[in-house]
Every structure is written in structure tokens, then in C-alpha cells.
Length: 278
Image 1 (cartoon, rainbow, N blue to C red):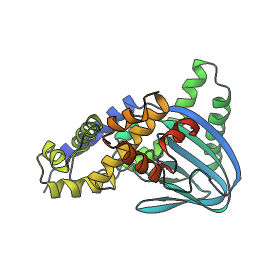
Image 2 (cartoon, rainbow, N blue to C red; image 1 turned 60 degrees about the horizontal axis):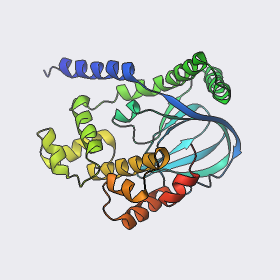
Image 3 (cartoon, rainbow, N blue to C red; image 1 turned 135 degrees about the vertical axis):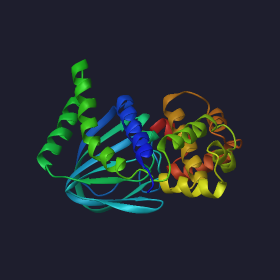
């Protein structure tokens, strides 16, 4: 009989370490009424922040490259950053929403598509979302900032529990984290799948299959997603020239970078920097 105790220890250690380092920074929260169209999300686009939704009437659909999720009352939804998404209205929807960033959350395998958890206590969830909404509007104390972070972390717990029960059985998560860190450090150049598989001592075919099982996309697509994610971050957080941003993200041809960025973000880089809001 195969002994899985070592794997369980690795996974438990991963989640304990993850929770100890979890960073949550809420950047905006709101309450939407009767929304049926999203003018900036009609084309596939990935943002640098995560979204939490709590719908209480109506419904809409979020499409991503490999599928779609229906957002409707009865659940809470966690929408990943970076993954190209677009929205499709079905019925006018009213919902709470929270936008936040978290570098630590990006290290979780599988969080590359929208997730849903059903609600047992709708009133409690609504109270938490409303609390964040009110605090974000006028947060002037350290205690208020701590309460915002703690409340959003509570809302994330069911998603973390859901993901912890679906970790890959055949591969320790910590090994994949080594690959993710390597990719982020090498975005300014061409990254071959063969060098990623070599990091783990696997054949290219076995590595690609395992990577897709965990992250939901092939390695090359994941690298492209990380490039665009990093580009958006630099556009929003720095004053670097667009040509320099293209180079830092591995695009030697600035015009190709413009074309790819517009294809996935829906607008060119300069406009994204000027008009994009959290």
C-alpha cells in the first residue's frame, strides 16, 4: 500500500505557511444595482486584482478561455487575477463586490478560473460584505484597516478549504512554487518549457501534463498570462516608458507588445495606464 503521509505533511505545511504569510489589500468595494452590461469587460481581459462577488438578485456569466461560470444568488464567487475573462449579462444583477490584491494568493495552483462556494448563511455573508463596503468608504484608523483585512480573509476561507481538498495527488505543491518563482524572475527573456521541466527533473511531456493539471493551462499560456499581468502592474504602479515595460516583460518588439496587450486587455497600454481604475 502506498504511503501518502509525506505528501499530506507537505500539503499541510504548505497551507500553514500560506496562511501565515497571507497578504490581503482591499483597494475598492461597492454595491451594484441592476447591472446588465460591463462596458470594459466585453472582451477578454485579465486584471491585477482579485474580485469577490455576492449576488442577491439577477445573474450574469463570466467566461474564461476554458469555460464559464454562472454568477447568481446563493453563493460567493472568487474571480482570479491575470486570467483573461469577459462578462455576459443575462438578467439585471445586484451584488456586492470587493477588489483586492494579494501576492500570496497568486502562489496557489488551480486559482486560474472563477470559483464558487455555496452559502449556508446568506445573512452573515451579506453582513461581512456590507461591513467591508462601509469601512472602505471611510477607513481612517489602523483598527478599521485590520478589520477590513480580517473580514476579507474570513470570506476567503471557504475557497481555501475547497482548494486544499483538491491539491494534486501526484506532485508536491512546493515543487511547483519553485517553477512559478522562476518564471516571474525570467519574464524579460524567452522561457523554454524544457528548462522548466529540468528544474524538477521531469520529461517535458510529463511536466506539461502535470502543470496543466494543476494550473488549468499549458506552461506557455501561463507564461503569457504572467507577462501581461506584470505589464499591467508596471503600467499602473510605475512611470516607466511603455517600451521599457515591454522589454521587462519579454517583448522585444514594442509594436507586437501593443498588439498582444490590446488583444487581451481590450485597450492599448497607454490608454490602460491613463484610464484603468481598480
